[in-house]
Image (cartoon, rainbow, N blue to C red):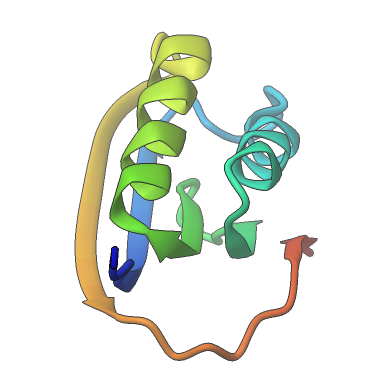
Length: 94
């Protein structure tokens, strides 16, 4: 039997990350990986990304986001937390 642990990543992306399609890209990639959560622009110019799923999917999503948008991201602060199970899909918040 394989046990899959669900985790939560809270990621703050900094750089030239607003107005460049990062939220739409992150949302599409997260959905491809079967993740739930949300992404939104923050008043300080960063983008906040909250995702829940298994660790492999979370890491795969971040790698794919880096591959596609890495030239816009100067720093990513990633915090791991226990998932809360409160999301049913992935959304772009405004």
